[in-house]
Image (cartoon, rainbow, N blue to C red; front, side, top):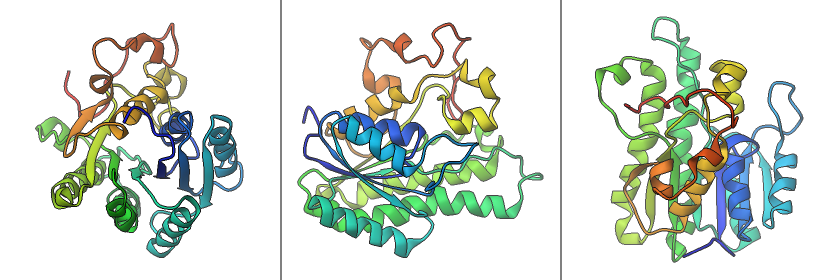
Length: 271
């Protein structure tokens, strides 16, 4: 495949940031985008709602089905997936993007925050992938794409923030498990992670505001890499965005600020 025209994607957490960028990139091909997100009304801390995201997707050339919901609610997720499959005649790709970020050390991480990360990140990946599975099996090119890191078991990363590490590595392990489990069904599954931090609301709000985004790339680099994976044939891989795009890509074009500082590596990646 060279594009996603006529394909139907279900994305979690696509009202802003990386999820929205992936949706808009697919929409430029003429894809159908169903997405589940919690933001129904504007929030002064977070740009965008499911409604503004749907408008961007349709302006880019795709069909949008915005659904307000919580990926932790398994019944709501199943209902949303069924609604999307009925609207678009099936689902060809499940994109696990929804995630909660909390880099607190063990002593400072409240148990309810630990539980939230596991519920949204790892459990949410399982719940959405499971709900999409019958449709992915029915598709001739069914696949799962999860925004999670390669498994780096260096003590530096195991000990940096164990609660978040477990939540993100859980997403990765599930996806690699899906790839192995579903190989005979023709369903592919891969993980994608950015080389650098990405200029998202989470990075701005939690990792240093404008100073952090000055060291970041834009969400479009992840979206272009996701597009390449969704059009490709690989499975069971953990890949990095700029590696997917290849040596000929103009990576400077993806800087969040053209005159910004030296780019900052994302977590779980070694220099």
